Structures are given as C-alpha cells and as structure tokens.
Length: 388
Image 1 (cartoon, rainbow, N blue to C red):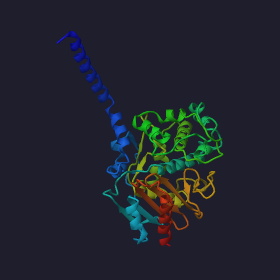
Image 2: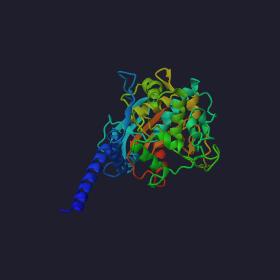
Image 3: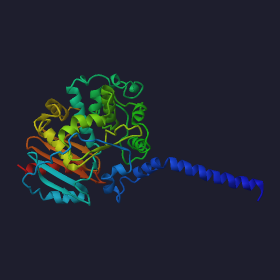
Image 4: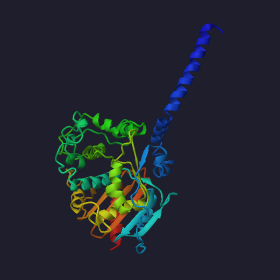
C-alpha cells in the first residue's frame, strides 16, 4: 500500500474516532433532539406525555407536606352522554371532575394511570400567574405597569425593551413571534430545539429583536412572553421559580405528588409549558381558584388577584375568546367561568358559581382543527350544568 493510501486510511480512521467521541459527548443533546422530533407522533404521544422526564432535563418540586390529604370523594355523578364520545374522539387520557371540592368523577384512559405525572403544556402559564399574584400581594413586585427591564436589564436591547410586566402578562408585548407548531422553522419550534439542546431560554428571549405592534395595543398569543414573566420573578426575588412555586403554591396546596418542571441547560424552569403534575393535583389547583384563592382556611392566592387574573382584560378581538393574566375566558362566559388550557388537550375549567372544576389531560393530535376548542368548552359547560 502506498504512503498516500496509508494516510487516507489513517485519516478516515481518525475521523471515525473523532465523530464517535463527539457523538458520545453530545449523546444526551442528540437524544433530546430526537425526542422532540418524535414527541407528538401517533405511536408515542400518549407515553411521551406521561414520561417527559425520560427525554428532557428536569427539576423536581419537592412538596413541603410529608403526608398530604387526598382530595375528598363526593357522590359519584353520571356525566352527560356526549362525554364518552368526546373522550374517545379527543384522545383524552385523564378526566377528573370536582363538585363542591369533592371528586364526583375520575377516570384514566389509553393505558395511563392516576399516578402519572403528565405534561401540562400551557396550563403551566396559569400556575405562574398565580405565583406572580402572591408576589404582587407581598410587595415584592408592587407595580405591574413598570418595564420588564426594571427587573431584567438583559432585555434592554431586545424586543421587550418597551414592554411592561402587564403587557407580557396579557400577551400584548408586541413582540414578533410565530407560534405555528406545524411550521418547523417557526419561533415556537426553534424555542423547542433550544430547550432540547440544553441551551439558554433567557438567551433566546433576549435575542428576539423584532416587534410588530406597540406594547399593549394588540393581543397576540406569544408563549415566550410567559418566560419573560418568569425572568421578572427571578430578577425581583433572586430565587428560582421551582423554589418559589413549592413555597407559595405547591406546598400550601398539599399536592399529592411531587411535580417537576422541564428545564433548559442552565436549570431554568420551562415555565411557559413545562410543568408536569397529576390530573388530581391540577383539579386541586383549580378548586383553590374556584374558592377565590382559599384552601383549607388559608388564603393561598389573593382573592383580588383571582378576580383580576381571570377577567377578560386583554385586547382580544370582539367575538374571540377572552384573555386575562394567563387565563382564558370563553366567549359568553358567566362571571366566574374561566379556564387554563394547553396544546393537545390539557385543561383546567372552573365554574365558580356552580363550584365545579374539570381537569383533563389529553393527547389530541387534532386539537387545532376548526371547532375543536369550542367543542371542548361546550363539554366542560355541559358537565358543570349537569351537576346542578
């Protein structure tokens, strides 16, 4: 063999070794990226949604209660006949219904179980809003009209430079952001890859520079706005969201299971969609809001924050679903009817007047089809009305 070919062979061997070393070093990142690419596939979505910690970086929320009391059982209720068909068509994996604080219906589907810690997606946003309300009442963040840069100077050169805390809380930041989950090049999917590769969510937010509206002028659902709220909270307190959530929300509510957050590579909680809980504990959180922030004689979230955050105060279009402080208000809703919702069928529906809470998780790959969101709300209303 000539010297030339020996060098070629040696070079190829060295390249293989280098690539193998790189793959070894990057195997976790590659694994998470592959997980993102198959996260919503038909054959994996149900299992993935109950096992997000198998593919992503996470941090637990260790409860302050050693032996939490389970939710009380109420009188079993027969739900409207349409619910069975809805469960099947919408790929519901869990459904818990409370009436007057007691469980009147609870079931799990598609091979899942009560103990599953399920991804909440954007239901997580409503939890963060509750935490912010507690900090506002404590005077830690006394004024929502101040710029976010008062607490997060790193955003001074970003698209958030002129946005107030209230602007981002109401999804009216004016930041240009493509939320199309079906477009692989969209901002929301680029953000997903940042999370999967263990990069910085703070850096992603700070790198956004384009706006298409004056802050406060127009409502547009922009998930990264919620991350900015998390940045404000961390900047105001010098503490992590996970520690604060345990101290202010999860611990006082006595969750039955330790939730966990997905995180970026810097241990920062993915607050806009990364909270994983049991469905029963979501119902517990909803019941606390049904009771104006009270839980077992303790005011967890201020009553005035419950009222303000669940009122349709954002500048949504006439006839559209209303939006408050990271909570949704259905068109035509009576006072005290509101919901948290996430992609693929995650919901906490609250009807304060009837003292009914509906918590559901799902794996509905058709959640964006025309009329599906309205159908879900109609089912929740029918359930609540059937319990009169």
